[in-house]
Image (cartoon, rainbow, N blue to C red; front, side, top):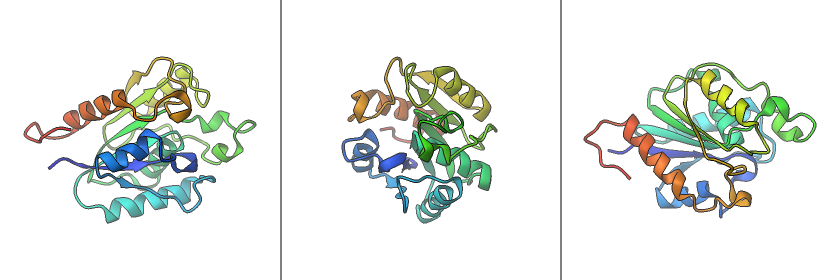
Length: 188
C-alpha cells in the first residue's frame, strides 16, 4: 500500500488554490491544521504535527512548504521522528534565522534545526525565493541529510509565484515515493 501523504502547510494554512490544498483533495492526503496558522511556534506546530501523525494509520510521507518545512524539522528535532514516517518532501524552506526584521511571525521558528533528519528527505528550493537564499536552502539540505533539487527561478513555489496546481511537484513527489517505498508498490 502506498504511504499516506501528510500535508504540512506554512503560514496562513496554504489557501484553497495552493498546490498543497489541491494535493490534499487529489491524493486524499491527511492535513495538519494549526490552531493559529498565522503565528508559528516550534512547540505548538510540532505538537499538532505529532497529533496528526498519531491519528493517521500506516506509513506516512510528510509534505511541507515554507514554515511547514520548519515544522517538520523542528518536530524531528523535538521527537526524534516516528518509525512510520518514511520520508519528507520539503518545498521552499523558509529561513527563520534571517526573518527577524521583515517577517516577525516566521522569526518565531528560529533557530532552524541543523541536524540530520531521521528519514529520507528531498528539499526543493527556488533560486529567487524571497524567504530563503538559494545557498541557505542548500545548507539546510546538507545539514538535514536531504537530497536537493533546484526549481529554477520559481519564487516561493506558491500561488503568488504561479504554482497553484504544481505538476512538476507531483512528478517530484512520485519520484520520492518511488525511492522511499518497496518496488512492488503501485505509484501515483
